[in-house]
Image (tube, rainbow, N blue to C red; front, top):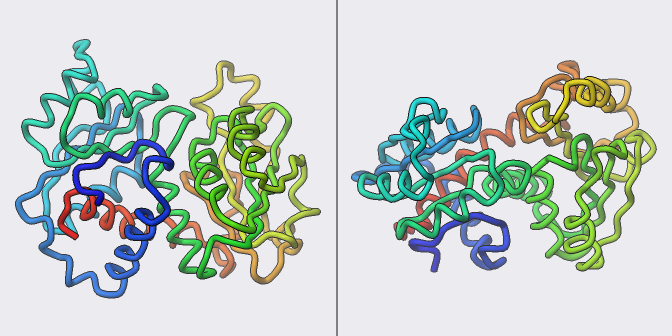
Length: 307
């Protein structure tokens, strides 16, 4: 039962509980009209201490399409955080007005701390370079709709694997499934963190390779998950400039991929995927963004105990 639970990390729910969310998301896609008034009288609070477009808009659109309402802020300067209010006090106050909370915060662990102070569901919409569980739900739903199952697939992760919280969350989820293999494609400076490699990939006996070129491996991939090099995670501009263009997926590189290799990206894109790739039917990142709304609709309904 997911009612009144919080989602902070992909390990918070069991495989069966995630299956319930995905099953409901597929049903919503098939018949959205059925769920149009499901959240009438409910309020979603969005607490975004860090910029966001897709995640914030998709949560807001999800709640509105379910018949609910949305309150919140999109940057800390427009909240009492600018006056020095603690996260604990903010969420305890918000609980007085809302039925469910979505939080994005630049500090790793902030949503986990916040969840301890409220009795309503709280969803982590990204905490620093740590986790982004609802992007993982988005990714998995997209994979399911494209290939039916996440199991027995080869996944390439390319770009910023050190700070990429979407990559960390997705690897954590996939590592609990059979027959997966990873290619981790990045410069040495942006390799996957040690704790992801050792405590998740190696501990679960997942075959993987860490490489610095994408072309030799693209033909083996079921999915290539591109990420941007995140300027906001760097301590100096020089390192960012040196690394930001190391991996650019263009039409020439797409020739190395198989006809059944799909390209995913959590967005926003900067220049790591050339716009000439957008019209390739294997490019699925905008469909991926749309799927994010549907899976967040399912998550809201489950955490509120409506379905």
